[in-house]
Image (cartoon, rainbow, N blue to C red; front, side, top):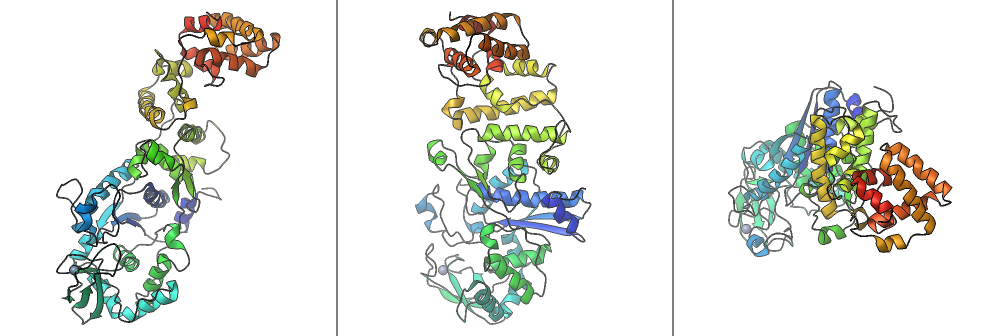
Length: 517
Ligand SMILES: [Zn+2]
């Protein structure tokens, strides 16, 4: 492997011994596309470790014992009011099925990242708590509660008060975990009060009592739950989003607890930036949401991986799916394939590795139908994309190429319907006499000249040469030739690449139109 290697390969090279990669997520509703970046960064690290011959595991924690602390706008407020503050694993799913709220949303997210080729081993925090796997960690932090309080104060400036305990128990009366305040640990039980106004998002019932925090009776605050995951899974590498990785942030608190209470070295952090969605307007005007599922429906899996993998973790991604973003993403992906298969030179030495790590199945070299040309051909009445691309390729399309064409056709349809700008939408004029009349004499003559060439010369390269020659001989700029042609076919001065465009249309129709008939 060359120097200046891909970032994940650098991590893999510097790893010593077996590695455990971990990521986790609170299933508080539809999972935002940003969380997908976390999964893919960890997946890429995991794959780089495997490629480097390092023994590695990849875990994904579902933090489903966290309380419901906000209500997504798409849910019924009245129906969920009574559940605010309960663990997400104990709340019913919105579809009325008997799975939990947490499972409902995590399953949806899991389907998306599995389609993208990430297959971590999943664990649920609710199960670890209930099976007693976190008991020892809970006991230890309760016994070191003062140290933990001091760490919160010293690292993050958060003063929890002198009787605060790093555990939340589930209220025996109302089942809420987000509303209880634990204030005394007697060695077996935690004394707590379910406070009506401890948090703004849920109302406690006022019950006061004592309860074992073990075997699912309680949970750790999330910064310490992170520590429990590191301990339990033996995590050696875990990246954290920018919001958690700032000085004095969650990660710093967790690391300090890990060092001072458990006397262990925390996992390697790979801080990563946000995945932002530009163009907020799209969410309302075009019905496009911002969940991982929504984005996975507008871009195929390899392309979505490519979009995430090509940026270094410390670079923010601002993705605006409207306009030309998606056609350009396809073009970049196809260009990367050319480099990977050694058909083109790379400007960025990481390109072959990025392409390889974007795959969800084995990559083969094949002809790729250009997305923007495909989107255009699909709009030409009577045109046949399969035939057009065979013409372009020069030989019949293989099975794989046909499958790629079929897949791209589906995504192009979505793009045209939901995301493309008006410029990308084409309507061939039924009649063009007004448009023809708007041209100069020189433009009309030039189009007429070209009609004769187009009729006899099938080679597109020759047609392009002819346009140049005709424009020169008729004394017009080449741009004026193009705008004249677009005017009579589309009623506008711009359009897709002219020569492939004309060749995708019915030949005698093109000849007639070029003659102003
Ligand atoms: Zn209560």
